[in-house]
Amino acid sequence: MPVVEQYARAHIVTDEEDPGAVPVVLRYDPDTDPRSVRVGLPGPHEWTFSRALLELGLRTPAASGDVRVWPCGRVQAVVEFHTDHGVEVVQFESRTLVRFLVRTYIAEPVPT
Image (cartoon, one colour):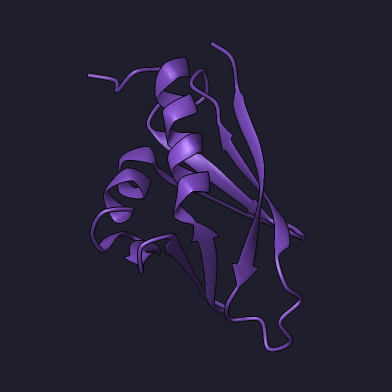
């Protein structure tokens, strides 16, 4: 199965000095883990979490483990990552995440 990789821009809300939109890599590898997606932020920051969580969080607040996702207004979504070092809050345009999810479902439908 092909790997789905999408480059996007997002705002890191928890950054004290707002650098503006930063580059983000959204990645889905159905051969490695068909149930998970990865979000890579600048630096060595990458999180892996459930594809279903991302989808649900675009419609209603959802959480699993150290990751929370929720809609923010009509056109944005927030993904919050908790670590031992603190919390990273990242704001995306919802359509970017929807487009990514559609591509993942084309590559690999929901596993049973």
